[in-house]
Length: 201
Image (cartoon, rainbow, N blue to C red; front, side, top):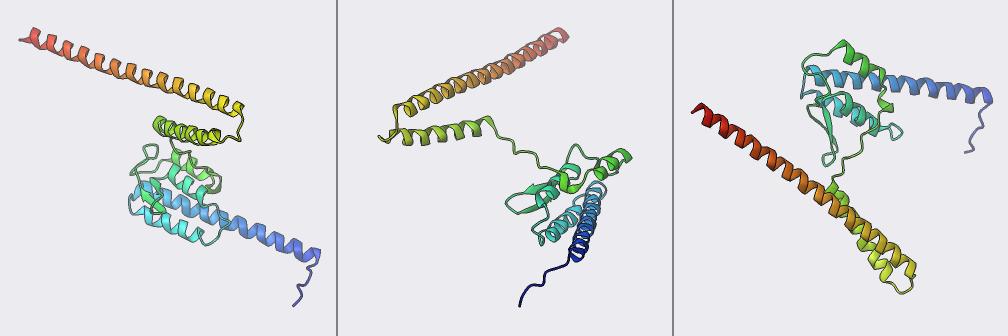
């Protein structure tokens, strides 16, 4: 069966329908997302059911930006994405009102569209970073151990290793100094408390 070529008028009408339906769907998702956020503020933990139901409904359409929807719900509501469970959980967000909505907050969450939200980058600790650098250096050692590689590659690796060792040592020293400052502050506080106790006796 041959596909019939549409006329330019039919194509324009179809595109207009796509645009209209697309906007209607976007607005519908926005209204439900706002309701889920509001419910998390006013109702609390039970609101997560609505948020996950919305995500599940959006999951049937691959073109919808689920990541953005998750980001919107996390940012403006009391929700957090649980990677292992692949769903949202209730989580108290200190930046979001609790118990009662405010006009100011309502203005913020309703002027931001769900599909424009971006998730914040995962926080990487200094120790995670060090582990990744060590893995990288170990891989580079394997590469440079191959006789086919040039001396320049080995020299480049030596420079990277030296820089990493220097950075790691400086970071450790800063950490030790910070720990020492905390200890000294604690000792001073204990000394002051002891003097006050002795004076009161």
